[in-house]
Amino acid sequence: MTDKRVVIVGGHGKIALLAAPKLVAAGYRVESLIRNAEQADEIRSVGAEPVVLDIETADVGALSGAFAGAEAIVFSAGAGGGNPDRTRAVDFEAAVRTMTAAEGVGVSRYVMVSYSRAGVDVDNLDPENSFYVYAKAKHDADAALRESRLDYTILGPGRLTLDQATGNIVIADEAGNVADGALSDDEKATSRENVAEAIVHVLAKNAAVMKTVNFYDGDTPIADALS
Image 1 (cartoon, rainbow, N blue to C red):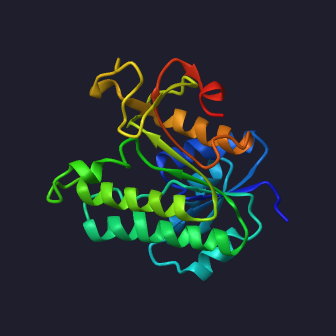
Image 2 (cartoon, one colour):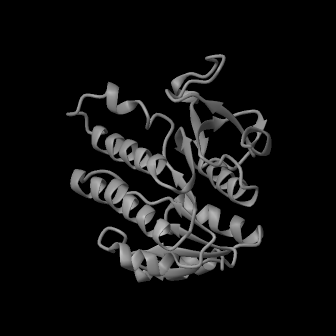
């Protein structure tokens, strides 16, 4: 039986720290997985409960124990670039283990924070490009999620900013383009707080299930854009 508990994987990330208090305000109990116990007080300060579990090394059994009984999983973790092996280990391999664990304990709702061109960059980037390893990891993790039995939502923001949430977005296609082509590459940005707002909306309203939604800051209220 679920208890309106959401487990955030990557709980100390900027988006996760913004999403946690919003989820609490929406009536959820939030547990945030962190790998460093020194981050626990910051997690508590945003209303979540810290759970020390390093997803890079945690096996499916450990993740299953953390997920059991939850209503939903939010994957907002990332290696942060710089180390190709660790990027693959966290952004793909650990992500897949969380999917397997969620399926195994019957937690069907799963929200993945990806990025707007994850579906196409691997076909356009030179494998020697420093961004390629990240693009490949996110592409493959998203593909694995689509092939799973989970009720997923994949959120694909653009270039992340620290701007305050407007609550308004514009939807982009798989290649990260908007319908009228009105946005330049520099304008294809998404505030982290708008991503947090989108996470709360899709969970609270059970919206965008089995969908990949790429988006930037725009003019359409999140509630209208994500259904």
